[in-house]
Length: 250
Image 1 (tube, rainbow, N blue to C red):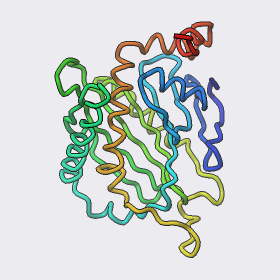
Image 2 (spheres, rainbow, N blue to C red; image 1 turned 90 degrees about the vertical axis):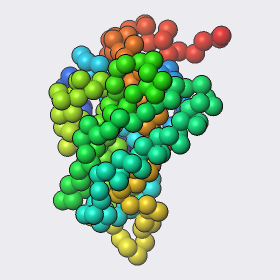
Image 3 (tube, helix red, strand yellow; image 1 turned 30 degrees about the horizontal axis):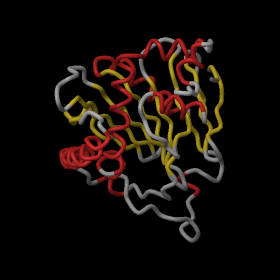
Image 4 (cartoon, one colour; image 1 turned 120 degrees about the vertical axis):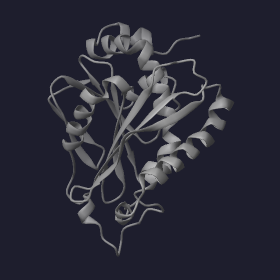
C-alpha cells in the first residue's frame, strides 16, 4: 500500500493525487483484495483506495472504450435512465443466480446523474439492497468518471447509504485530484486517427453500469461485515495481511 499524500501513476493515462489519511493499493495486490471480497478477476482494475479510518472503499478502473461523445447529456431524462438501469440490474440477476450470489434490487437514485461538460466529469449514485430482504442495510454506489481521449477512468465509492452525505465529498475530492497526462486528455481527441466509442455518455449510467452494479453490491455486503478487519490488515500492514489474502493450500 502507498499512503498519502502521494501521486499515483495510473498506467499511461493519468496521475491520481491521493491525500493524507487515505492509502492506495496497486495491482496486483488490489486484485487479490477484490478476489478476497468475492469478486472475479477484472482486467480493467487499476487499484483501490482505502481510508486509514472509515468503512468505505473506492475502486479505480480504466476502460479503454475509445472517445465517448458527451452530446447526449443535454437531452437525457433521469427517470428513463433509472428505468434502464433497473432493467439491466434484473438482467444481471440471472447471472447472479447461476453463481449463487444474492440477487440485488435497485431502489432509486441517491444522486441523479450530473455531467460537467467543461471538465468532462460525470457523477451519479444508485441505492441498492438485497432483493430477498436478507440484509436490511442499503448500500450505495457513488460513481464518478473522468473522460479521456481513449476511454475513461472511474473512481467508484462503495459505502453504507447512511454515510453517503459525509463520504461523497471524499469521492468528489479524489475525482478532482485525477488528471489525464498530456496527449491523453479529452481535448486531445483527433477525429482523423482516434477511435470513437460504440456508446455515448448515457451508457455509463444506464448500460455499462448495470453490469458492474453486482460487483459493487458484493463489495458492500463484504464491507458491512469485515470493514474493520480489512482496514487493520491493509492499512496496518501487519502479518494479518498474509493470513487474510495469501494463498492457502486448501
